[in-house]
Amino acid sequence: MTDERIIEAWDGSRIPARRIDPRRLLAHDTAHKLVDQARTLQELLRDEKLKLYAEVDAYLDIVLESYGARLGGSRGGLRIEAIDGVRKVEVSVTDYQSVTAAIEAARVLMNEILDDLVGDASDDLRAIVGNAFARNSKTGKISTERVLSLRQLNLSHPKWPQAKDAISDAVITAGSKRYMRFHERDTPHSPWKQIDLNFSSL
Image (tube, rainbow, N blue to C red; front, side):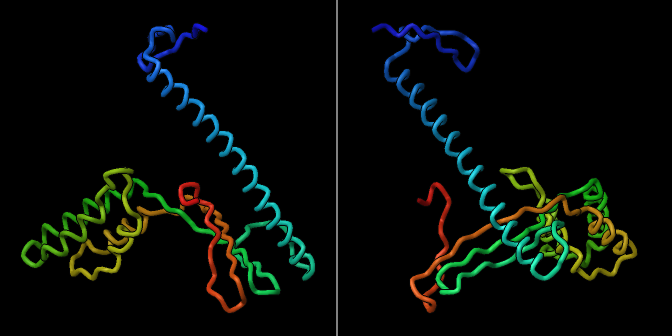
């Protein structure tokens, strides 16, 4: 049976399927089929994740209500452990940070300080400062941890207080993310084993 489909190529051209090498067409169809299946699985996992967090919040509401505490608000980390000691769920909240425009002021001030201290600034110090402002080659992002670590330096320079302020202002908390981890073990005295939900590890 002749394949009457028209396949749109990456450059926008439209090619009749019957003119495409069968192996290339097979690769095309397989790629679309697998990605469609992955999308379906992604939606299923997202829905299940929302249900799991709803279960945790419902549990927490019951606990809070039992103590007469106010419901709602920010939900922090907690641990839910079974009486038999072989299963537990851990929920944690991690803040994530981003850099502001003050990062450029911090970088300029640090370079000015190093230039003034050229006689005393070691190669190690220059490397620390340089690495702090370097962008990740893959993500293009600056490490907020390395930038904030510069505040631990103790430099004898009149611009150092300004530089420390700029470093502090350069990093802000952009939001938070909630994580849930599931653990089980054979006996109450066995090591905990995390249930791996990473698709590639299964």
